[in-house]
Image (cartoon, rainbow, N blue to C red; front, side):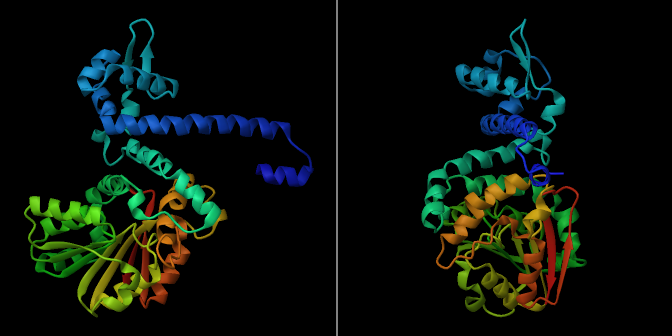
Length: 367
């Protein structure tokens, strides 16, 4: 029974519930602070430098990581207080338990949870903008988020890239054979385009197009593709708000979106455009947040709080920043997704979950 239900039944203030909530909230404050320090530890390589199982002084760790010792020492204090790092008071040395390193180091990829802590700091940087939107409406545009595409590319590097060939593409029987033979592929909302470049490198006979609203992300992707010598791929900056009217019919055989539909200004137009752009035997694969369209069905979601926060402070607001933006948000849910895909004219929508990816589900849509 929830706290609200207890209050409804008893009709009186419950001191024990108040105490329990206060204790929980203090844990949340400590957890939020720890996430900031975990983000710092990830970005500076401190967890990777600790991932040798040995005991090390703050001086030794600073030398190993190439960092300033005074900052490393204070960071270690936060890590010890949060129970992430062990300390030996007699020797003044520190150690990352291997059980903790199993989800905090780059060597742990695709299970590196420290990567996700970066979202907390990134979203905190736009808090003033979000408060302004609460008071006046509107949204915060993409360009206000300094590192979001960089973080998303790293996120995709854990959830998409390692599983692309063995688990994601096989969701569509025969697709890999078609890619090998040569088809036309597009990734919309491609960000830095890492998934598309992975496919372009593996399937040289196919032609790949990446489209994103962010000029910064497209510039990075174009430069990286050139550096890798990928001649069968191109990227373009494009607003997908009118994609349903701008795209020519039947120009692609395979279209993908990876966590990209819900933050579009006009997601319905983009999906209608995808349907229009597909050849008669084409297929659309959408990876998107795994949740329900109904809040009460997400109360036991393992990372529900994180996803709603990212939605409010990025996905929803960047959509609302665009003229007429719908503001679907990351937690638009399966029900709304199936509704939008069906309304766009897709005859079948299959939904799958993959064991490696707790935050997303995969939709296979056919005309």
